[in-house]
Amino acid sequence: MVKIYGYARVSTSSQNLEEQIAQLVDAGVDPKNIYSEKFTGTTTHRPIFDLLLNTISSGDTLVITKLDRFARNTREALNSIEPLLDQNISIKVLNLGTIENTPMGKMIVRTLLSVAEMERDMIVERTQAGKEYSKKHNSKFKEGRPKRKIGPHETAIYEYYQNHSIKETTEAFNTSKATLFRIKQQIEIGV
Image (tube, rainbow, N blue to C red; front, side, top):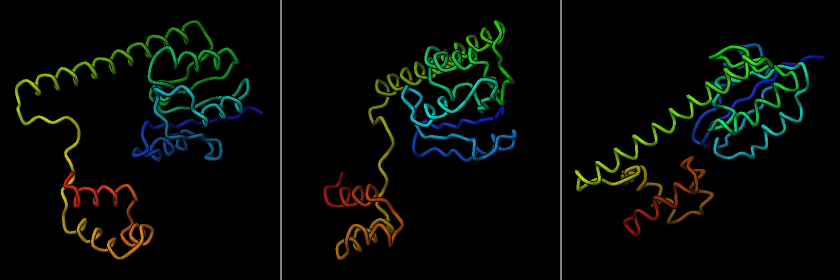
């Protein structure tokens, strides 16, 4: 029996998969056939994607929201896409269309992935150039996010923690251990 599968991926744990999953469901993918994970595209080993590859069969369709959900560069994406096409698995990219195992289909994939990789490389290049310019022309330039300020909420968390366990504090303030330790470090060391 031919099945339709969906794959959703975001690159960081702070990003949300819900939008991609909703798009896949809207495209007709049964939620139980959607495989999703939070893994950077620069990592070639993705356990959920590998599970999907071991599940999908000839004649099935794989639906993704964008072509770059396969990987972050052309070579890695082609290493995933071409074997699927060779197994007569159709790939439906929601913002592009259906890619099938034809010479034209493979050429379209290679071209689009090359353009996407070039765009990412140009963004990195512009970002690095902007940082270098700022370092030379702005004596107050600091790379990275500015540190969060300690406000009344953070002070309350720290004061509560002085008489309670880590678990009690994180549960009482619905916060993570990492946030608690960051607040503690900022207050005690001034970091």
